[in-house]
Image 1 (cartoon, one colour):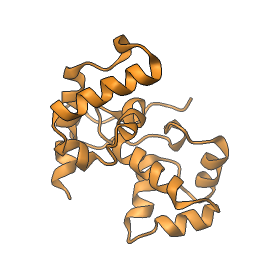
Image 2 (cartoon, rainbow, N blue to C red):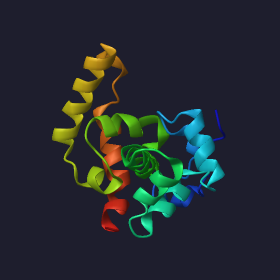
Image 3 (cartoon, rainbow, N blue to C red):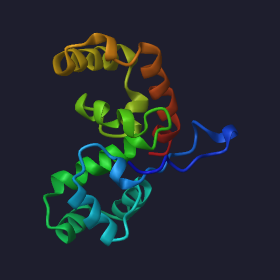
Image 4 (cartoon, rainbow, N blue to C red):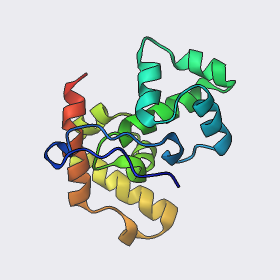
Length: 151
């Protein structure tokens, strides 16, 4: 496992995006990480930067020789992971619940998101006790607010 994300000073924690090593994203194969590294993409923010200039998703997928579906998935995970309260630990959970960006997370009402998270946990893990708390999900939504304002 790679090192922890770039740390932010305490006074800005929760407002500045977190930057994770690309291999920390859930579901990325080692070969995909190596291919991204060969293209100079070592972190989640580098991936977001690479695809944000115009529509570069297709170009990156072509360079990697893979479907754009995978690149879009990695971009969505990277965008969610930059929310400090979410990180790489919970970005996959949110993606499976249909949240594809930090901006969308910032606009999602807790009364809609939390039941989805609970259903997903029970359906996949058969354990409700491992589900993040309602308070934790509220923190994710609040931490995503600055990212929602940028769009």
